Length: 322
Image (cartoon, rainbow, N blue to C red):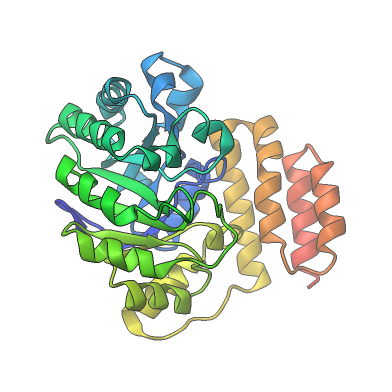
C-alpha cells in the first residue's frame, strides 16, 4: 500500500506506543518486516520550547525508514510550528495523535480529547498540513470516539481528509474503553467507507489470523500492531508471511528469542547508555519471558539487577534450560 508517494509494502505498521516504541524497539520490529514504524508521541509544546530530551525522541535512523514522527497537541499554531520544526529530523510522515487515552494528555485537551471537538481537530490538522506543505505527508491516528455515546470516528475521518491528511490510522476502541473490550472493527469499516485516503486498522492483532480478520472485516488498507508485538517483534515476520503467502511459519525457538533479547539490549545500551538501558529493558524483558517457566521469580530478579551483562546471563539461564 502507499501513503501519498511512499510505498509501505504489505501495509504492516508498528503502533506509536509511548515508553515502548523507541529506536531500539522500532529497529527490532523493522528487522522482522514492519513496513512502517512511528515514533513515540512527541509534545508539540516541548518541541517549540526547544526541550532537548524531547528532541531525542524525534531522532530517526535510516534503518527505520519509512518512519512517521508523531506529534500531540491541541493548539493549531503550536502544532504547526512544531511540525515545521520537526522537518529537520527528516521524518517520512508527520502523524497527529488524536488517540492517546492517558489522563495526563486528555486532561490538557490533547490526544483523544480532540475527538470531542471536531472543529478544533480540523483546525489542528489543517494547520499542520499547511505548515509542512509538500515536504511530507500528514496522517492522523484516531479512536472510534471519546466514549460509547460519541462514536464519531467516521465524522472525524471526513474532516481529516478535507483538511488534507494522506492516511488515517484507527484504533478500534473509544478513549473510555482504553484497551479492555474487543476491538470495534465495525466502526473501522465505517471509517474506511467514509473516506478515499488509505485507512489502517489497529486493535487486537496478536497473530497472523487476527491480521487477516482485520483486513477482511474492515476492508482497510493496512494494519497496525501494538501490544501484540511486546516481547515478540518476530510477530511482524509471521504476519507478513501469512498475508503474502497464505501460510504460517513457526514461532521462534528459545535460542532465537534469546538472540533477539541480546540484540535488543545492545541497541538500548548503544542508544541510551548502560544505566538507563538496564532500567528500561526491564519492561521489555518481562514481555519476552512471558510463558517461560519461573517467569515471576525471574522478573523479580531482573527488576533488582542493574547490570546489563548480568541480566543477559539471567536470560540465557532461563531460555537455554527451557
